[in-house]
Every structure is written in structure tokens, then in C-alpha cells.
Image (tube, rainbow, N blue to C red; front, side, top):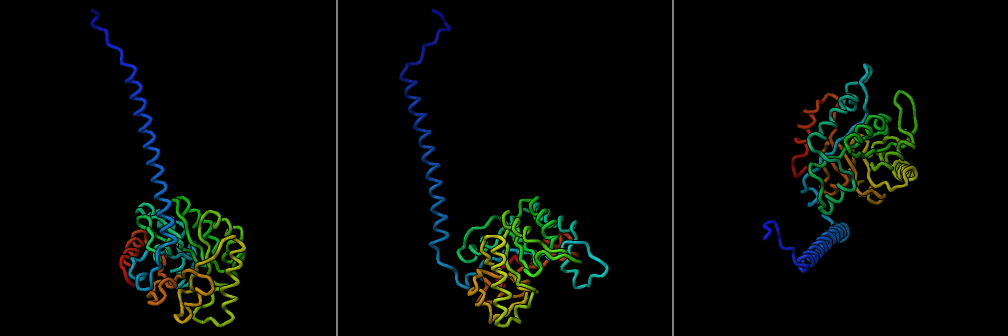
Length: 293
């Protein structure tokens, strides 16, 4: 007898293996489909069926770090000491954004923050928001370019009187603003000409709020639903009017949030030009690692 001879497998064995293989593949496909369906359902539930949180519940949520930038340029001898807080050199700005990326931060936008505060929606691990005030061109050339390098998005609070202006400081054009919006950044309002919100008169709601909103929406083709107070100053008695004029939320600087309108007094901190990246990291944790204002 040939010792190398091996019995051929029975034909039924091949049929059985084929049936098991088809069954396993079909089960896997069904499982994947069920997972996709569950995810879709969950998203719908999150956005349409949850009860909005009240002011007390919003204040109790852990604050998300929000940074504020103004001018990204090298300081001049003629700059005042006060202006130093609003100026950060391009090199230092790049270092700070790199530190955020290296530290595991993920940028979020106002809609995500709103859904978290109002509906308890989940945010990415170590969320942070990066915002820019006043429409300066360097926010586009340096700010946006740097953020894109790390896959970050930003929020640009536009002062509409400045759009397209050139001089000692150059400002973004309509085309720049449209590009920012098209790339997935948020374009938001910062009044017409930086008038102090606490000094608003009746006519200012049209000239400082409604008309800038309309102009920005015409430029971007998207709704403008967020606002930043010039100088970070607000007047509690007028906060309810922002909702009436179409805003979902508004941003102050580092002062205490309003107990009745926390959505319209979301805190930010300025990243001053004198900070090192390490200073900024500690400042973020000191300012926002708490649950109440």
C-alpha cells in the first residue's frame, strides 16, 4: 500500500464548509448594518428628543476651554503696554497651537459647544475652542494657515466695518471670510464697529447687530448665530435681546458668567503674547478645570 496516499475529502465536506462561510459573511454584514442603524438613531435622538437644560444645569457642566486671539504680529515699539495682551508674535502663536495639538486637544466649534451645554451631547476628548476677534488679516494668513496644519478649526468674530480695509493694520476681505466659512470654520458677529454692548441704544440693535448679521450671512451663505462682546463687556439687562435677534450663544472674556443667561456669557481667556506655551497650558487648566463660574 502506498504510504503517501491520503483519502480525498468527501464532497459533502466542501458543501458544508461553503454553507458555513456564506452564513458567517451574512451575519457579519447584518451586524454592521445594525451598528450603522443604531448610530443613526442615536444621533436623531440626541438632536430632537432631549429636553434642553436650564441655566442651573448649564452652569453645572464643566467649562470647555475657549481661547481668544486678536493680532498675530510682532510687537512694535509704539505699541502700548495694554496692547501687549492683544498681540502675539507669529512664531509664538505657532508654538502655542503646536503645544495644543501635541497635548491631545481637539478643536470644537460653537454648535458643538451649544449641543453639549444644552443637550449634554458628547464632545471629543480634551475639547478646546480657538477664537479670533476683530477681523485682522493676520488671523487669516497666520492663524488659519497654522490651524489647518494640525487639522484644527476656528471661530472668527467679524467686525464688519473693517472688512477689506487696509492701513497700519490690514483686515480680511469678503473673499477671505467666505473661504474660512467654506473650509468649515465658524463666522460669527463682533458688531459693526466695536461699540461697547453695555452702551447700546435702541438704534444699535439694527446697526450693530442686525445689519452685521445680514452682511455676514450674505458673504458666507450660512446663518450667523454666535456673538462676541467688544472688550468682553456685557449688560445683564440686555442679554435676553440677543436671543430675540437670532443668537444661540455669546462669548465674554474671563469675567463671571451670568447666572440667568450662561449661554450668553460663555467665558474665554486671552492668550497673551508674553506667555510661553507652558504658561498657556497651565492657564487653561487653572481657568477651566472647574464646574462652576
